[in-house]
Length: 455
Image (cartoon, rainbow, N blue to C red):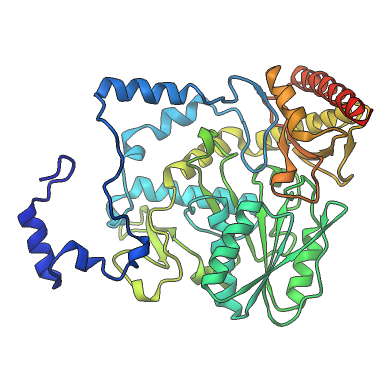
């Protein structure tokens, strides 16, 4: 018997006999020999529990979080204030412990939470149908693409270069498996420059605001997609939707996005949740599940699972999505955050972010040599160009306790001198002034080094 599993040698022998193979090696015979490891894992000497704890604590101490430095990082994940109310509710055992409601009639509390979440996200995006969440933002984009593939049956996606790089990468990976092509629409002056659309395009995918922070013209994109008979998909930052025209108002068919800015901490990249909303026309192709409201025989309000496009116990061979568990707990945190803010509160929050973003944009562009990458309207994030190597400037700022933003060269090699700066309500005017101070010093030091090299 293994130390970590309960199966004995006799158990394994019985299982192998049941499926008609003689050994574990025969079970995995289809794996090419070149891909198999023919030696024992080099695990080294075993450690005691205390030694393992100390090793893990030392590794964890190497992390730097937003409590340790003033951070202007964004690029899809944002350092918002998370009210204590959220933990006090999602850590209750009624929410923390339930799994997928396979017997939904006895899971009324979980189903109501799903229903209320769907209602809030539907109102936020201006689209009538929301599911009970997906895993995260890129998964939501891919799921939307698959819905468009099924609905239109065409062979190509057109995706803006302004869509998050992770989402574009995930879409390319799955599109290859579906036998589809991905055509990238370039950015011009910060905005998506859509190519001509033909009858081979299943979906047009843009982001609002886009990765460089610019506010896109969703109405024009949706109209162009509709004229070509394609599905329009918008990947949204949920908070700016409180001020901008919603995807639904702009005629977009599917609105998806990363839910982390709603009630979820950064947590070194996860977990979070993805949201998915669409029109009634596409409701039967929506991934995951939808909770609905009904009345029982006595006229009392109740909740049911209305649609499930794929579950482990039904219709597996006709699946349109492989998501089952979703991210209900993280989505609940998003719902609580929206409820805590209220209709007016979310508008005031975004107005505050817009004001601080405008102040930061002006303050940083006053530094000699620093310029805007584009001059489009922005909400919470904007791109700059620096006159010195960006990585060196970032390192110099971080030495003084400020993370100035995200270097764009990693994902946008056409912008080797680009820096993406993000604002949230946690970044005060004093923080912005501190960023301007340390960035100006880094730029001046870098300029001096460049002059010395030139001489």
